[in-house]
Length: 192
Image (cartoon, rainbow, N blue to C red):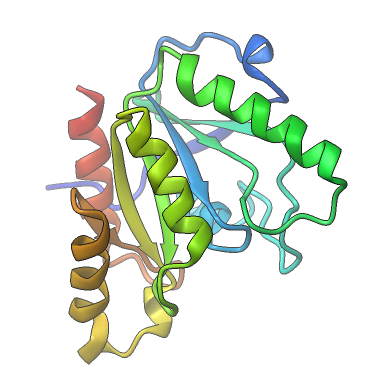
């Protein structure tokens, strides 16, 4: 029987690769636009509403935030792309730090890109995916906010993202846990 939840705990935040501790656990960095639901995802699979800070204000995550899930794997919540009320200079610094982390962090076993199921795939989602593909990094896709998608359209949304991005595409809903088992089983498999 697959699990619906794993206990999660926040470990540490880091600004750049040199500050990231070694955990000797497989790591999954979360990529996605601001407000796509990365924090809600962390809270959802941990069954803990306040583990990762959620906000209606996009661009709140400014650091790489590490969460340990039952000693099985780490999730690294990254700053969202596509929206941030910060200077160009600050954005460029983040980009440099994040690229270094994504390209050189040895613990990473797969990236997870989040796509908002309520909308068409956005331009910056495609740009992020192109960057990932250019470096041939392993990646899976999670389609969030599926609770807002009418049940009769769920499959179409998933198929549409599969057609665009290929690979593993999984749905997620922050309001119910019906997709958690499939997600946790996939992450456990990738961790082996």
